[in-house]
Image (tube, rainbow, N blue to C red; front, side, top):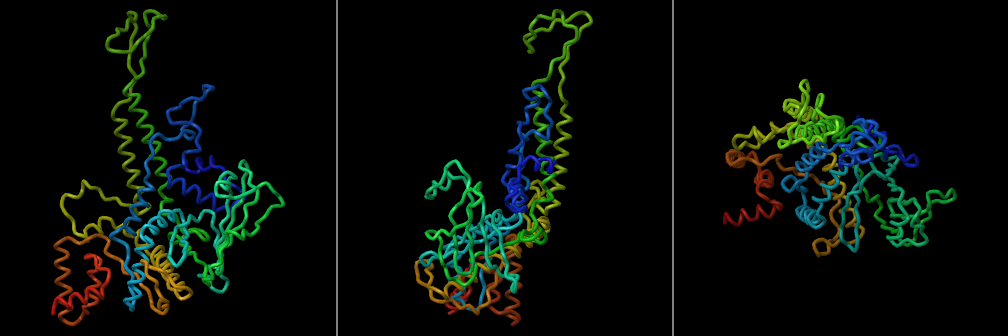
Length: 464
């Protein structure tokens, strides 16, 4: 069924083949996969009286299972209680980078990036405007990365190219544009500049990219200010594996089954009347409790309706499909009905082991492969020109420091768990097997400690 629906979406052959694939996956994520189907689900016959098959109808019920899996995994990855802390040997560097994260709202940017990148890949753009740092997440649909031949892990340039209407370009201030036409838009990021090109008509055989001197910017960073993230291991080429691909077919089956069940319930509320040998053929028949149906001696009248067991069977089938789909993509299969009492953090981890496995893989792609490269760009940029962080001018940051991420626990500990952990840490510190600094770091996330050094100083002051 998925391939049938994909066949109704026309692909643009002038764009790379990966664009069509990512566009379909993005439609699944946004819930617009069925928009190209010509008929509503309740339409059973067309204007010519021909029966409309289900594959040409848009489901009346749409269960966003794929979106739910993505949002659950991203919440476990970058929500307010799960965002990682920066760790380095230089406390001043850590404080500065924490301020950069807070000012740029990197938490929100990474949530947006992880949702967009769930189709296979996403790009993070780094900019410095008037000394201030800005991050943004770019959909990789129309982006093409080129890697260095001598350093395959280093971007040489990233190109963006897609079609745009003339009306949109005119609204952006472009001149000599036909509002009714279609144009190519292109820009390229490299190690020295962000180059924009003047739009050219799609149907112009002599047209081509001409540099837009007005909008092009020379940044002089010495590196491409873009971080390319592949979502999950696997995939093809520059795109990683999609988070929800294995659940799409089952999700479509759920949508159509629920739509059919809804139609059946509507028919049950207004059943079809069947009359055998009515008394007169020209009498208008009105179905209702206040209208008696008069038939001949051998006649009969019945109501054709769907039994309740059919609807129950559909619901049971849909629940089974949902379990299979969530299992295939490592989604959250926990049910609130099974939680009869407060559970410890470890018990919740075991219950949601599949979802944690998925989020753990995403930590590699978006943490070590996303957050750390962005922060390293901030450090390198500070050595080229001064930055302004939280309204204060910042000098050159130490580029020799090794940056690390310190991830919090998957689930908060219960009161009993916190007591046992505190007793274990206290025993290790008193026995000389654990430093006070490491002890504070181990409980920092649970107690909202962002500056470990300041916390140690406060502990010493309290002791005095």
